Amino acid sequence: MKHITLSALATACASLVLACATLSSAQAAELRVLTHSSFGVPKPLLKQFETDTGVKLVISKAGDAGEMLNKLILTKASPIADVVYGIDNSLASKALGADVLDAYTGPAASRPSAVALPGLVPVDYGYVTVNYDKAWFAKSKLALPKTLDDLAQAPYAKLLVVQNPATSSPGYAFMLSTIGAMGEEKAFDWWGRMRANGVKVAKGWSEAYYTEFSRNGGKYPLVVSYASSPAAEIFYSKEKLSEPPTGSLSLPGGVFRQVEGVALVKGGKERAAAEKFVEFMRSPAVQQQMQTEMWMFPVEAGVARADVMKFAPEPTQFDSPEGKDIAEKGAGWVARWTKVVLK
Image (tube, rainbow, N blue to C red; front, side, top):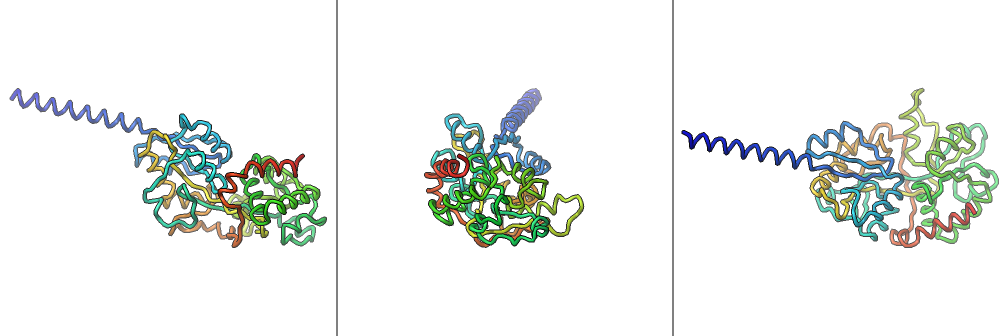
């Protein structure tokens, strides 16, 4: 009897130790997620991920995507994250060249995707393009521009606001689209003519869209933004608009398709948890919600488009230099752009 009691006690103690070890392990599964500042997954979904996996998320928003990647590269010896979301196709080659990412080969990496992003698992995509204020153009009776060359002509002087590619992802993407379409020399010739024609340069997207764009009280009826911006105008409208007050022009040479992805960080500590997060970002729930949180298109097959995205038709043409050229020449292009447009 005593033997049996001691055995039972030993078993109970062993179970307690195992339980404590399990709890300790669960508590230790703290996943460091690095994102850009535009990351937007609803809190209930993030909480559900934590409940389902026993992983605590520690999300760090590191500014613009370019700034985020620079931080990842600078801390390569002692990584500040286990998984990173938001590196796009304009930055992917730089990230791969810096050797800060590890390959992921799980289910999300092998399932069909609407778009590809070599080296990362694609999560979403969108289009940087020129948008316009419908009311302004209706009132002025000025025809909409049909080409980038139109924008450099006198009737469109001082009508366009763009973002500085040195400080803005959409600004950088728009610059890349012009180089991809025209080649470096012709593109910078166009930018020089745009400077002479009074193009306005803003630091970032928010300043361009919410301060300088005429739709929001500014002076400029043309703005570099996203093809999904008209849908967002409908979604957030207080007066419940039935038609967007803005439109996208999709000018040839003025559209860049941006593909964002998620990746494991080389040297990250919580590999198993990081892999679960990769799968999470490709889950139907996240793919559905990101459409009206980050205003990007889902890549996962079978995920329905949000109804409001019918106001965000996808451009049929877009341009970009090759990824290796972006990685090798991107910084030089930004420096040349700065000299041509600002100095």
